[in-house]
Length: 440
Image (cartoon, rainbow, N blue to C red; front, side, top):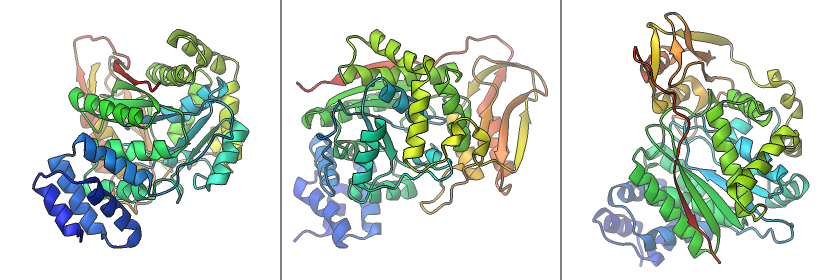
């Protein structure tokens, strides 16, 4: 007879779990045989002891099979999704999904909420008045067929075990584990009904995995899982040392995403969004080279078709599509505070993680699973790496409603900046590596 305490002890002691034991633990969530605190203990044991390739694959399969695997074969066209491991200011899904859809890719995207110091695509989307991310699978298919893209949260049918563990990981500081990250991401993605997947694996101080070697191992693990399941998978490892773009929060990131879809976004955010969208187009077989794919994606911005796709998506998911033309309809913070520089010079560092934590303290993210998100608050960065700043010039605008955590947040943001006298080149976002698992 399998007991949760025996499985926990086995992993705690560094032993390898069998597929049957992992299946039993995952099924125990639905049966009620395994308590929250028991899974929390197992998660911590996995963080400390790790999982080998077989265990990771078994966990992925068990979570995927905890619900239904969607069949999208009745919808014509290649179905390609993208997933990012998360970073500060990373709103690329909101930009690349309509771009790829306008270029001919069907984009069925099941996204997550804020996790740790990073924001969540669903929280950003739900700052749009009326927009629904919790829809059933029939509506999911209908929206995809109607608009060419859909961005929803996990339904009760899609990998329900992962939804439970995702929340527990956030609450128990067990996020930064390669087996847990890989199995969580891939169980959801493989259950969506996709043909292929583009992964954006972040590395650097603002990523969940700061070291390049860890990011590479995560990318390789997810590519291996995808390949084993017969899916085309491409992974890009991208640098996340400073926030991506200039907006960090929820509604403010919607505003910046709209600017990008008009071709007016920050260079780093535009570059990585277009590159990831191009990889989706290439994976879908709609272009022969990455340059051709990127040109096709750029045309969707130039001709307005990407922005129109986003407008249609908002309307299809019950949101107020007027925000596309009037972002003032989005939630607005009660107070805007300018954080002024105390010295002149060049910005040599803008550490992403403190910015993410500070915005979480202000209410833009979750300190606990049941924390309430304030969609209006956040930070708008005016100075980033390589920028010149003068004494008294604004480094950023801090948008606030509840001011209880404001002093701590302001200190964290100020400490995230390092300003020096000597000049430096402001680096763009760098794609460190590209890995591919192409099933043929």
